[in-house]
Image 1 (spheres, one colour):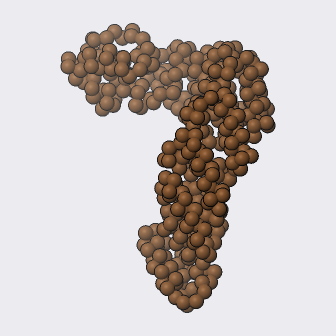
Image 2: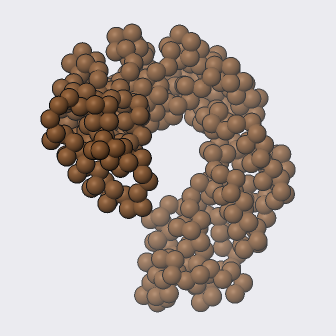
Image 3: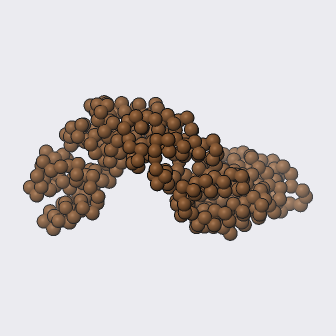
Length: 385
């Protein structure tokens, strides 16, 4: 009768998750207090209870994960959890990691986990940064330390030179740890060198855009050839940034984004100009490209060809930066403090400090409305209003 009741609790979809969790835990407690050997249902109860209480998994996630593993004794899981906790893993970290890879609870913590943790700590990872890294990418803990992790990172270090740069790269893209040196890393770097890219720029790429190294070798070669044909200088940082931007966007999405610009009247030459000035513009979503272009052309009445010269504006927030600044300029124009033929682009593209000094703090006493406009408390009505 008790086992039938447990099974009912496990399979019933509760309307109130907290109530169902409490009921479930009371049932487990009742089950574990009975004498005799735990049956299959009891072992499942133990697994779910352990996943929730010791590993921090939510109720539903614990039930799902319990379909993949079964905890018959907590001795090995306890030692794994203890090692992780000792090295700065919170329950949130452990829940994330174990949800992605439940069998981790049964590995040998001394032979499998501890050496890897100590190795990454020796590179300079803080406890919190390392816990974040390892819990977000389960594959690292599954890699061989001697055959994969150390050789790969040693190879990268010949370019980045310091552990600090290496740690910075891994924080940005941990998947580079799993790349094969001979089949992926060396060929991609060889492609860059074939165009004359200096090692100083390769260092910069690995530190800031390490994900680029993980791109398929044939795709990498194809993109590098295209970027070179566009006229990017291999000695400049923009060459690598352009390869990165193009590699991260599928050919289909690339054409859709180009079509957005064409729909607003950009020629192929204007598109190339914008991409060469700021390659990262192509990492902006199609939706944002449409919204920003629409604002510049329809609300500000700017020529699309003029917008092409300032592609950095697609990388900043329309709501938090562009519109509030336009509102400030609108207020000042309406009061006659600035001319309507002001270069709008220079005002929008400049950094916060010079904009504040020139248009906000300079007039806040005489025109207090600029503060409300800058905070987004006044809607932008257009420069002609």
